[in-house]
Length: 165
Length: 329
Image (cartoon, rainbow over the protein chains, first blue to last red):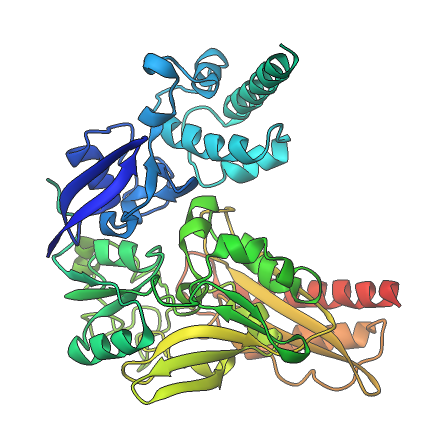
């Protein structure tokens, strides 16, 4: 069966005809052309396809597109700064060498974004817990954790400056 | 466009009445909520599903409702992430929150539900594989084949049941509310399960688990599990424990998950215990668990190791709760 799926994707309202058996990952990659959503294990094990659904990370490869009716869905493309500039998290992943091959990076940034929206200055344990569903075969995770800590510090400093200014 | 899943129709009933009508009209439909168990299985061709019924729009499906005298009703649609941080599950019933916190990673806990966790499929080395892998092996007793590769002489499937939530809920005496064609009935959670990996749920045709009821409880509880890798692996063994005051002493309830085709409520330790627990008593607990669980070669981990893991966790939890009870006095 096919239905009209209405959702907000990276801040923009969309309506698409989708089949009931369409997975969210295929909707995002093929219909919406958002290829930051990576197809890794295809079974909900690796975290490369994580997206935010109503603010919470969800594995897009084991989520039905039709179950996102009315939801706010965000992918990495929607998490960058104005005009496609890097967000503090993306910049920190780049500068602190948190990305090597880069395949896991979109999922990592999605998980870290959800964490930093709730917790301004997470400790290492909280970062490890938030990223425990994201696998990386390159970095050994140390630099990823460093990147999240760097971004958190920068974002907190920006907020303090804004409040003072 | 890629088509990863075979064609199906998705229904989303908004009342128990329309759910019942749908169940009658499409008896072969499978139930879905978070999808973290069903969708990977569908992707691997482990399930035939011409139709899915999405339960997430049912009324009060994701609510926690305090009942009289401190009892609690947990809607089956509660997400594990909600259970993990529910204030109602801090304190005496914290084992339930501990178990929810330990399931998979954060993204799975945002999707997966209480009912789905309790009704999840059993798992086996010879079952949770791609279709070509299983075809090369002549399939198996659980699905499409006629031999159990774990116990080829046996007549039943030995796949293991891995729900974390089941263990603490059974230790806390939970009952499940089942909505079916002839109305609602209640069943002790332990009786929801059968010792058959290919048919492990004792649900009547058309029945749906809609809520979990927890009786009043004023003691202490905890959940611990052993697994190879956090966030990735299902438990080698998991133990839920509850310790409560009774006339003449303390009563310890233990339930083990991850070892058998059903969660195992440990029998034979329910006399009034004295605190602190003696070494003899701890040895008796250890022995009772080792004797009552029957892990088989359904995982990469040897069955003997899983048995020892279960008994060690049980012993450790019993000791920890006994110490907490002593400190609280």
